Amino acid sequence: MSIDLLARHCAHGAPALDDAAIATLLPQVPDWQLDDDHLQREYAFRDYHETMAFVNALAWMIHQQDHHPQLWVRYRHCAVAWTTHSAGNRISENDFICAARADALYAQRERA
Image 1: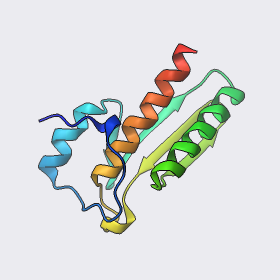
Image 2: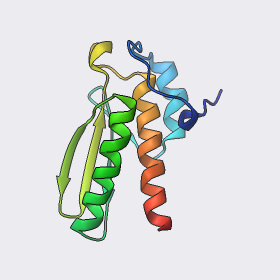
Image 3: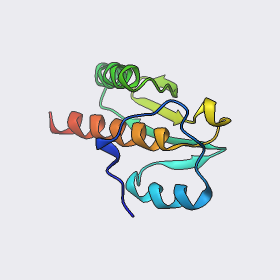
């Protein structure tokens, strides 16, 4: 069963997902990987300006969703790792929603 992640919004108190639910949602964000109860991905950019433009757009989306990842920003890269603290630092649907939204921001940058 497929969920339209981009149409959903983060919910406070989202529960941790079990392995079956994670396996169902992971194909919807194919560039993301599971690592130590985090959903993570690294994005590549042409230069620092493009990296920071993405980070600023990502920050706005994060603020709107009220769901905050770990970010690592370098000159031409930004790595993002999602986990849900209120779900015991496990992965929730919120993490997948934000991963899909981050990918949409990245794709929008590619079309510009």
